[in-house]
Length: 389
Image (cartoon, rainbow, N blue to C red):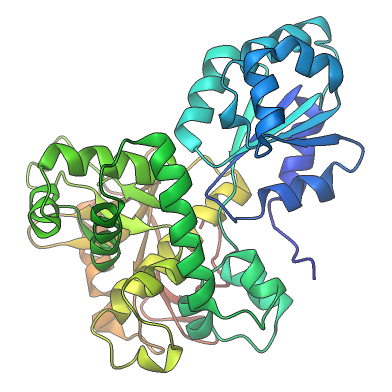
């Protein structure tokens, strides 16, 4: 079963305008299936095959003679030397769009290679797991609580009979053996898995690297390097706070979020939506899901807004969108029926912002229908985010 992705139109448009499209994202987010569907006239070569990867890295010119454009190169991070030769081919045909579509699961490496060798020639787009709107459109019986625990990996929704826990056990094992070993020389993968689970327990919270290092039993410098690997492989987001020069008491530490609530649920051993109401981590899991929904919404809409959070000693907003001096604010609440008390935090932050700068305020919750909480704050569901969200 094919599940429509909201980003499809933007990817097709990008390939029609630029010679190279680079699609990155974590493993199993559907990159290969998506490019196969969108670009059926492109040959697809996967560098997961050692023979293809060896030639692409060892003799890129011969590889491109054997596989001329239009071409999809899957898992292109296995052949970093290929990028310079792609630049040469593109420069010979600068009037052609859609020559190459490159996919890979190591975001930072791909972005660096594209900016270094393909500057002005490539558009880099990140693909995340399914949004709640995409998953619920494919299965009307799916509840948001079930989606939170099952997560957004496309295979889990294209094949509903799959056991989510088995999928995630395999996913974590593959991730540790392939991405972690390639990006980092980890002597003991068990330590890294323990670190991954410790990050899941902190999802939705301020990042304290010293506490994280202490709990995992490794050095602070090791935790910093391992967080970099999680970012490079598309597993976490470090959401930066909004800084104001005139407000000295704002926090400086980022908030840590796992990119998929289902993987986060698995890592903290929560595998049934019926356990959510009794779990002290339900609020943090909901905030993790909401953060993912906001990132995907901004990615799909290409809005150009900067996503942050706001926190000082007395005021807090989970999410803040900023562009050209305008601020829109959101809080994530696990409740189905938020009231004026739930909107209080947003109201206080709005009052702190410069006059006329605060736009909309929304409480993203489990309500089936949006409704106004106050004159400035509205309750909305995760699947019906209003613009600019």
